[in-house]
Amino acid sequence: MDDESRQLLLKGLTSYPKYIPTWYNYDELGSELEDKCTINNTGYYLRRSQIAILETSIKEIIPSAPYDFSLIDLGSGSCSKTRYFLDEMLLRQKRLTFYPLDISEEFLMKTVQQISNEYGDRLSLSPVAANYENGIEKLRSANGPKIIVWFGSIINLSYDDQVAKLKLISSLMTDRCHLVFSVDITQDKKAVLKAYNDEAGLEMKFFQNGIIRLNNEEHSHIRLDKFQYKADFIEDSSPEHMSYFRAYMQAKEHLFYSIPGLNIDIEFEKGENLYLHEGAGVSCKYTKEQIWNLTARAGLLLTDTWTDENQHAMFCRCKVA
View 1: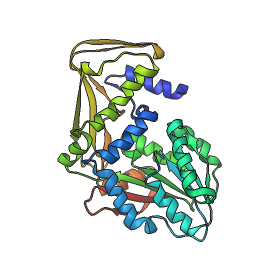
View 2: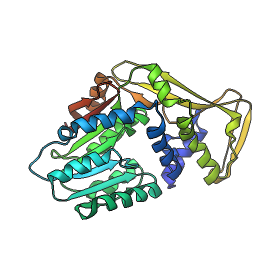
View 3: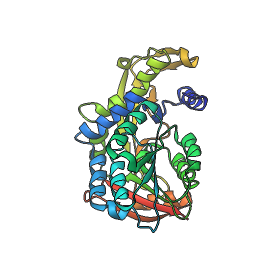
View 4: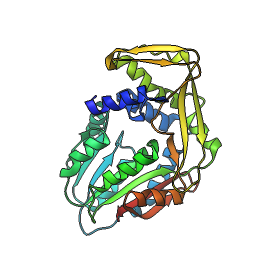
């Protein structure tokens, strides 16, 4: 963990209310847990909805152009959805340069090896193991027309951070570049809670991975059984905001823990919450108007959108304004 990430983690654990940043879940184990959540959680609608859109609309989502694109995948994970882009783009051009970016180097390199074996020499792979800020700085050397994909990760950021990240991404773009990102447009509270607070506890295990990682890497001894896992959904239809899900651990009693690796002590009063994300919430849900306002604030022009028949997911394509 670099110094900047360490400071962000320290900030979360010493703030009030206390929180563990969402990105901290994404070590190798956390990335594997998220994959299990999206595939094995029967109530998790978002991945199925995204795949449905890609299966029916990938030819439209990738714009036609008289030149070749390179492909950047921000938060690439296992590249399960990215393969739709790889397959379609390789039908249109002889070679493709692909830049997968992921915060977990171990998970990224496993995925890169799999992709390399599948696609062979027609795909030139340039993996970037970094967070968004550092990774985007490294990607500034990627010249020429680009398609930048960002699958769902925007929904796990605070509103201001969403705007900031979109502005940062736009700084990589010229008038021959396109950003394609996906969002959750579900407004059904029952469906949201079924997806993110599933009976099998898959989502809970993913959200709690930050605590497991603290114990393993920073030598703390935080006991999960001393907390109660809780989740709720906050609805907000105002144009400049969005609805969101909250996940947190609530202390069952007064607790005190040392975290030697970070050189801090943390204390919880009975009933105090430890949020498992930064910002007010995570896994944001949007209306079309909220997406228009979000992209406009970031200096982007929303040119096209695609949704599934159940109105759970939306793919958005943008250009620089």
